[in-house]
Amino acid sequence: MASFSKVFCTSPSSPIAIKKTSRINSNPPSSLSMIPRCNAYKEPSFVSTPVQHVDYRYGNPNITDEFLDEYASKLEGFKRVFKLVSEDPLQGLTMIDAIQRLGIDHHFQHEIEQVLQRQFMLSANGNGFHNYDLHEVALRFRLLRQEGYFVPAGVFDRFRDREGSFRHEHCRDIKGLIELYEASQLGMDGEDILDEAREFSSQSLRKWRMAKVDLFSERAIRNTLDQPFHKTLSRFTARNLLGTDFQGTNGWINILQELAKMDFNLVQSLHQKEIAHISNWWKQLGLAKELEFARDQPMKWYIWSMACLTDPTLSEQRIDLTKPISLIYIIDDIFDVYGTLDELTLFVQVVERWDYAASDKLPYYMKICFKALDDITNEISQKVYKEHGRNPINSLRKAWSTLFRAFLVEARWFGSGNLPKANEYLENGIISSGVHIVLVHIFFLLGIGSTDQNVELIDNNPSIISSTATILRLWDDLGSAKDENQDGHDGSYIDCYMKENQGIEVENARKHVINMIANEWKLLNQQCIFQKSFSMTFCKASLNIARMVPLMYSYDENQCLPSLDEYMKSLLYQSIPMKTLLPTQL
Image (cartoon, rainbow, N blue to C red; front, side, top):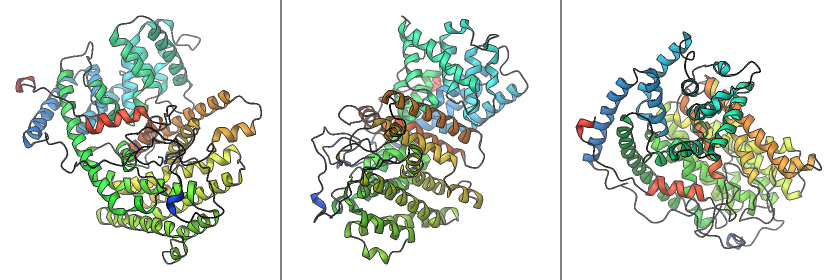
């Protein structure tokens, strides 16, 4: 998350993932406004500009009582269709896949669970993976595994030859290759067969992509290679499927698409109301006026919350989560571009003790920031206690103290011009990414499974958090672009790694980082798919942060995020025209 005024694009240094090259001042400037916002003019960016003065308090005016009645009727009607169609094992899997890709699976959790339970029992009896083609086996494997059912990777053994390679005949099966590639994304450490499946399917699909295939197949191949389902936010890609001709599928897909269009517009209206709430809160907080050097990007901060918590029923949690996310960015700017080393050290000491009286010794800009931090932390703690019976204030304060210490470590490193060892940089960078702050808040805001044991676990940066943070940190460092608030390049893992490995080509260093990201995905899969410590909603939030990363850090030559801009405009402001279905169609 990066800092900009209305005319600025996003920068690669964004929390959750903050790269530090603090411009540590030996003498503080005489006024906050002396800090330049940027070295050069940048084109406006949708996600990085302040929210415009548009009244979204009431959402989409087309969401009327009649609309809601029709929507509820169609939803119940399709649930009946789902129940009938899912009696056929393959059709049931196909329908679940379509529902999830269209981003409306939150309406069908009970029905999906029933179907997958039957499918799992079928596979446990030895009938779910034998005598079925590659497409069906891979689809069943993926849908079961992503919902936490243990399915061994060995189910793909029968598609290999005696030498252990996937048989050449499968190169001709486009549907099978697509599903095999999708299934391979759920691999874990030590599952070599899924690594081989990914390599085999990706190579074969790229050859098909170069060949002359029909438009439907070409589009399916492109979408699979560019946006595999497990590593993509379905809500962000669903709109592209709403007008798609699903070749070879049954008639129910048209009914499902119309239902998804209504759901899209309904959720869009909800998000517009949330944006209005966040915009009003941010304006009343007043930090944008008080800290002119800091970022004024409530839209971008909200996007993280929207991506993490996709269930429409979690509206209040998305609004609450945006508040600490905003402070991660503001505090990052204080450490990156404004504070002196002495001031930053004092700031960390105040936060570590959480001593409100001692904050009087802070410079004014730090004092008002600490007040906002204290107010928001207390507000969220009181709300969690009221709703879930547990006061998380000690855990939240501990998380913030840890983040401040990590920021200070990086400020000292890059203020001195000395790069640390690569592993040392990454260990600290996992914390300074801000991911721990976000997921700790999500954990308590959800209020699910917050036992004493889990609280102790969440306080100590468990693997599910550290793997997510590592993915984000390394992706951020691959960008290696300049921050608009800073002079020179940010430090990065690649810089540290190349310093340790003299003579290595930068492209080889980047490949090393890409492999590290792939390995962290395997660890994250292990934590999210088969662990029992955290709720499924929390696990999905962790996955969603990792899924959001490529969008949040895919910068163009102007340091803008064109793909993210287009997604957000589509998601938040462009409603979908719908046709009216006759009651008999349901």
